[in-house]
Length: 363
Image 1 (cartoon, helix red, strand yellow):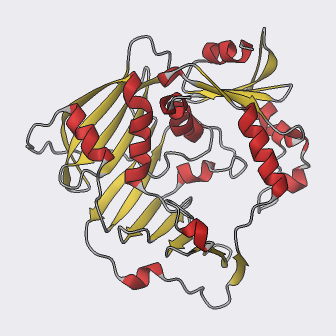
Image 2 (cartoon, rainbow, N blue to C red):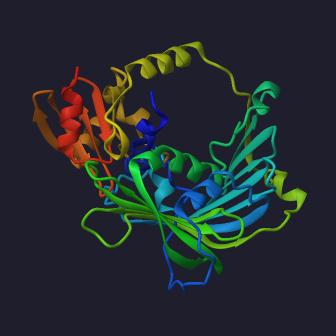
């Protein structure tokens, strides 16, 4: 399977439906100045982003979400990442990082020192300490699920969509008070997608992505932007990457283990997942666990106890659809759509619903 066939669905539509894949790589433009910079070809700019090593930095991110997602609170995993007020990232450039996410009156802090990950919520005054096994810690990206790497995330995005895109450099911009090139990826003719383009503002010096904007067809305002409002490329104090729980905090310690049942379920899900199509109009299809929609509301509710019954959410926020493939529920956003069928299948992509129908109809 070609890597690019997974790309736009996982990177963009996953975000639209609450997976949060782009939550830490993109942001709204202010009144940009257009700095004078040496000319660079689109291919050279892409290559420089792919090989960028910006080193240590700290910066503040903001998210602008105009996806049109229903207000479902915390019922959809990852959806809250699209409604954060701000996020502050610190990294030593060698694997250690600190992320502080502000949302309303609360703040979540995630500290990764290479062998341990701390996750602390000021709202509940609780902390989780995860010790990464030595053999796992040696692997690239180990324990970094919650500690964002703008370079790695954008590099993965570029690698997945560049072959099916027209890539160009559309002038310059000033982002976070730094001069940047505007890299634009546009679907090639024949790509059936809801997306018009993805724009990446690339720092002219470090080649680190400073802003990514996802624009859908028929609109001039980005559906999703996340980016730095300020960033400083300087060495960071070592004590930033050490964490001591506040007095009175409830602490839970964990060591990652492989649950054989979970492993078997993951392997089955992998076998059931299929990629249909190629490029921007790729659709990912698969099956959900048989009991996923039958979970009791009390078990699925959020911490405030609100009803999060999966079937009730489907009935409230989706449209009933049917075709030769059967019947199910459709959810649409400005950058993608997904169908959950009544017999437990799913299909999702940055595509119109008709493309999903065709994918579900394939044997």
